[in-house]
Structures are given as structure tokens and as C-alpha cells.
Length: 256
Image 1: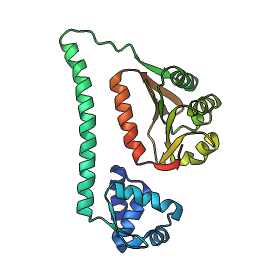
Image 2: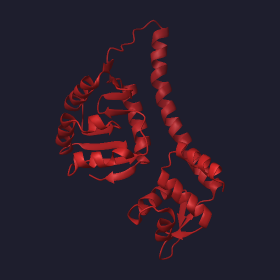
Image 3: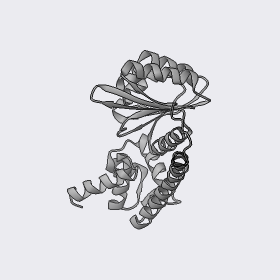
Image 4: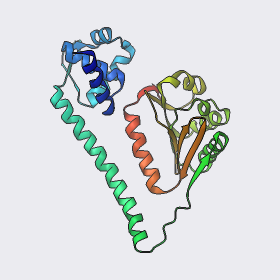
């Protein structure tokens, strides 16, 4: 396969939610046929300690099938079948988001058309690094149940002592899922070593957020941090669904 065509194929697979390692493993199996985990590790350069988790995710997505032999041989699902599985999964996720989107936004639309008041007072903006961190701490202290979902690609916040202390304290009694970008792997391990967190990484995150009983979306434009915070059910549920979508394909870094 030509290099340009291969790169285009990789880009399209990333759109479907595949990681670089998953793409490399599947394309290698397509090229060579059935391989053992050790053989696949040697051909792809993926460490043997990681190859099994990569293959597990590909099996869950039904892009890989296995033999009943010892050692286990891994085969690529035929591309037509693999795409069929991926398409069904994407359509299912779209249906879930569509139902939530239409249900909540349509109710607001109907209310405005009927002359009723729509209260948006619990939706507000937060500007600047200090204000963002203070708002995160406030949200974690006052607006969390028994779970916390965090997606942060921002080194400054992950290294902020106030944030680190609060997360470590919460991890003793809360279930915390923490998603970050691959380039911050060492940073997050250094900051939260020994903490009771579930941590996964992805190649890239375009913005971040904190999800409890409220949600706070965070973006960074040049050097300015901007946050959108709300306890509106629509935004909280939408954030949870999107987080879980990103989470399930993240590479496991640390288990609680």
C-alpha cells in the first residue's frame, strides 16, 4: 500500500475513534494475516506489555477475531465486516446523543415559542486561569456526588497544587475518571502517583472539562482560559455521554 494512501486510511480510522496503536495493529494483521501477540508486538513495535490491551480493545470493537489454539492467533476481521460493526456503533451513539439533544433543546424551543420564560441563569462564563482553577475547586467541593469525570489537556492545571490536593482528597472516597492527552502522561503520573484514580490517555484532547452534578467546559485560546459552567441537565448529560465516548477508547494508564 502506498504511503499516502496508508496515511489517509489512518486518518479515517482515527475519525472512527481508533488510537495509533490500534490502527497499527489492525493494519499489520491485514498485511500479514494471523499473528500471535508476540509476533504482532515484534512487527509493530508495540511493547508486549501493551499489545494485549490493544488487542482486547480491537476484539471489543469486533475488528479482531482469535483462534482457540495455544498460543492464541489473532486475525483481522474482514474490512467489510469491521466497517459494518463500526457503523452500527457510531449510529447507536448518534441516536443516543440525538435523543438527548432533540428532547432537551426542543423543550426550550417550544417554551420560547409559547411565550414561557426559559431560565438560563445557571449558565455562566468564567475567564482567566485563576478564576478557572477557583471555579474548579468550588465545583469539586460543593457540586459532586460519588463520581467525578475529568478531561484535562492543560499542564498548568494538572500541576496546580490546589487542584492536585483536591483530587487526591476526593480520590479517597469518590470514583474519579481522569482523561488527559498522551503528551502529559509523565506529568499526571508524577502528580497523582499512589492516588486512587482511573486514568486514561488519548492522542489529543481539544479542550477539557469537569463533570459532577454540574459541568464546566474549559478551553484555552492562546494564553486565555475560558470556561462555561452550568448545572442544566442538558449540558451535564451531554458532557457525560461525550466523556464516556472518549473514555472507552482511551489507553489505560492507571487503574484505581
